[in-house]
Image 1 (cartoon, rainbow, N blue to C red):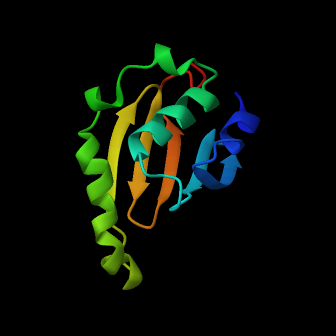
Image 2: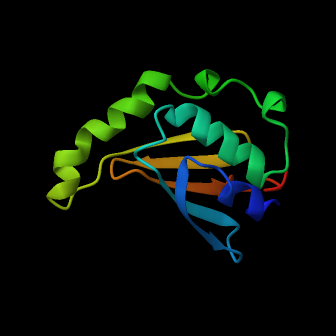
Length: 114
């Protein structure tokens, strides 16, 4: 696992790691995270110690336009409701929230470092 690598991604502002569950919670930098799909792919590659090229295209897991549309829920987030999109990519379950937070959790019954 490369905790340092995910912290060095310029598109991520804050990283929290729960060693008990091997889950990362991150906040995307709104000024640099224009391509959410690329940021997610780079984060998964970093935390699983894989080359980005070894992961499938993120479009095989989720429609890239859906990633950007999650942020249209910003008004709901301001009112206390967060929209989210959940999908699997690499060996991680990805939860992307409308407030630009992202949770990368291992899939059940999988080696999280694969």
